[in-house]
Length: 244
Image (cartoon, rainbow, N blue to C red):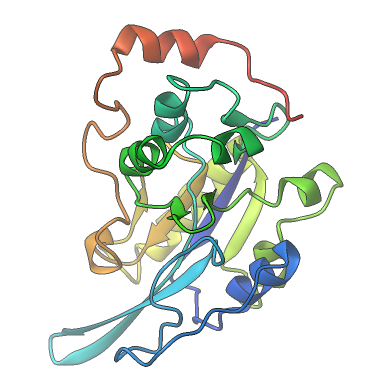
């Protein structure tokens, strides 16, 4: 059964528990950081930071408005990164049959730097990160090992404000729409972001662009350059590859 996250940003307090839990579960090392004028830390995603709580401060009608965005891979239903990587090696990026999570494999790490950059450039959310020194390319894996064991992803498990939810996609879509209807009473500009295209569905209280420039995909972003619609639909209708 296809799985999905629903993340209600109106409830996020930027405690960064999700960010820490992700690092702990994946045994990712700490990063040397510096003060760059924001409470956000580190400054960006990396091969050692799969989940990052972004901070944005806006002044609206004389009032300071804090917007928090726990960013991660969206596990796109038609993933441009996979469509590009398939041109080089169909085993480089796979879909887990049970969850439909988009997963990077060891075969991806063997591709050249130019190929990895092309894969990174295909992502409409600017998510995959590549370390040219080690050759490693990495991102969120939906904690697929935990999910297979009947557990919640680490980030969802630790969220203290009930901002993060995870389950069958149909249930998450229903919850997202119900929550949006309630939230709009307080935040009339609230909306769901790209809910038809991704398996990480965010609910924003205002214009998504205020949170981050890559919060929402550009129109047509799910059709990578050089890939025909015929090829895309053929791939979309083919059986999902098993996690090996």
